[in-house]
Length: 137
Image 1 (cartoon, one colour):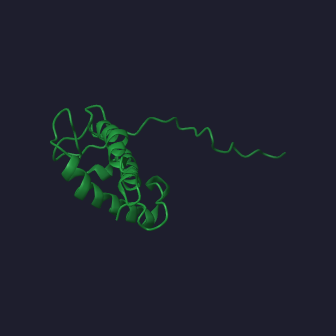
Image 2 (image 1 turned 180 degrees about the vertical axis):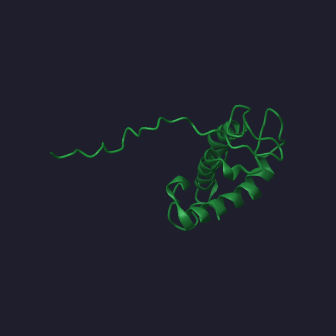
Image 3 (image 1 turned 120 degrees about the vertical axis):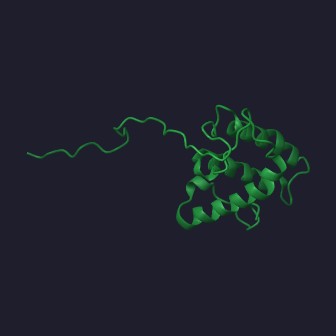
């Protein structure tokens, strides 16, 4: 089901958890596997990568979900006739280029081989955590 069909605007997948997240990921997966990849996937090469386990990459989930939301908004019933062209120009190209670039999201993955990127380094101290308790006395 394309986003927007249920009558209320779908929520961005990164705001969901539990069963809601699972349902959203399932809908996204159906769209990616049955619409996006058959039409726009193209060939996997050393300069145009793809990971067969794309759902293991949080950045890919976020970008593809945003792409899917834009698809529903710009190509669904009631959208402007120029919507598909806008979707191709403003959404599809930039997202696929970022994901498939040799330096992009799937840079460590090869056909038949998945490698999740190393987590971004973050210091151990959380600058937003409450300070240590104050001792009385």
